[in-house]
Length: 129
Image (cartoon, rainbow, N blue to C red):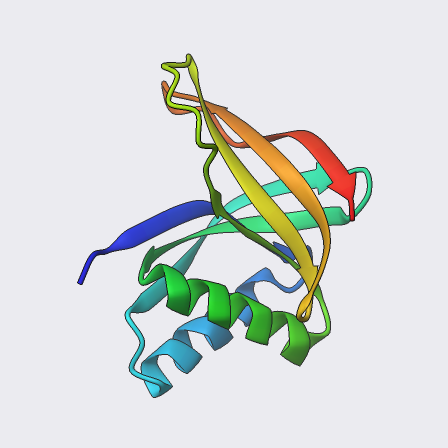
């Protein structure tokens, strides 16, 4: 099984610790290949509010399923990241794309950029759906 990871998943600010604990418990309970960790970094968006970003390792499908489940359970907005562009151009920065969800519903999209030299993720574009 291939291991994946992402640092551009997010939880509505104020819920980070509680939701991360719940995600890890759910993964263990359902025997999913998934582990989430907070890295104490927040991003603010104009359209969706602030989010605590977190990183995870494991199965991409499990991560996507769990983040939607968390959004419904806690009635919060979440960022489901890890979407790449089709372009294969060598760039100075890393890029990642994400959907902002409330439960099953996609309410917007966000583009992230970070320096390849280890910078933090920044929101560069956002749009309401």
